Image 1 (cartoon, one colour):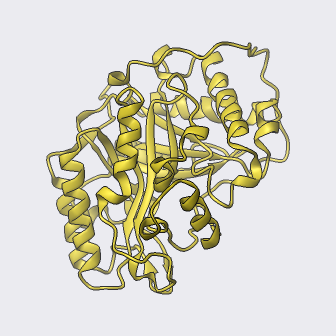
Image 2: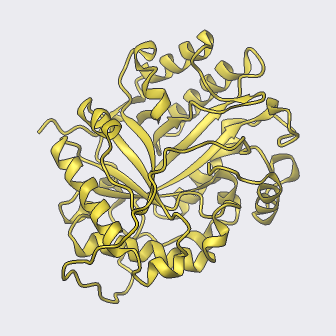
Length: 352
């Protein structure tokens, strides 16, 4: 979820996606400060790398798009890494956030990957329009970043590392960057940079591409943001139980199915793609709500084997709307149980 998202914008977005009024705002949560790295002042050149116009590629063999062993990846954001002792296990995937121009890897990324965790990395604009990105204005920074990500995956023996260009492009904070069509053109351009540099997974590289939208967009409004099966390996959604946040954002307690069934339907309709729950969490305002929701998510992932990863968002301390599990023994116990479930034993570590 992006920082500073306006509630009115979320309501408008959900309504535009055809979501019933009772479900329009089940994703809403307070602003969260993602760990975005600010862009550099200047841009390098591509060192002779040449991009050419090309037709859309046919769909990739999706069975190869999540090369993990042991079922789904259990993960969370950087703050959840601190709870690995209490969880009794290492996170298989860590959710991290960068802006174009940022330097990868940071110390925390190296620590994550050294322990065997892969990462799902957002590479977001820091205000540069989609049209400008598609025109190549940030090619130097983007390519340097992608090469560093791929090299890190090789160095730390990760069979896959995951990239999302501009997660939640339909959020109120991102719509000013351009239209959905311009987002798709920018996505295609960023992806083509990786292809031209032979960083993509089906060229022998390690980069896998994840489209991340707000969960209710998949209920009817995802089409304009869809780059196509040759450009995306995994579809993902961010969704939360924010019922007790006390801001009137949500008028019923959601179920995991209400949040994420539209994602699974979209994935099935687009070649049976794997799906990630890229951010999820529950507020802790009511004593039993958070552990109960965690248990429901575990059951949901267990019964839907197309879900290839689930990442808990351990953050948010504004008013009643906190998703932190630390300090909540029952919630930590529920999340630890989920982390030890047989369905959540996936790993991207290759061992070589």
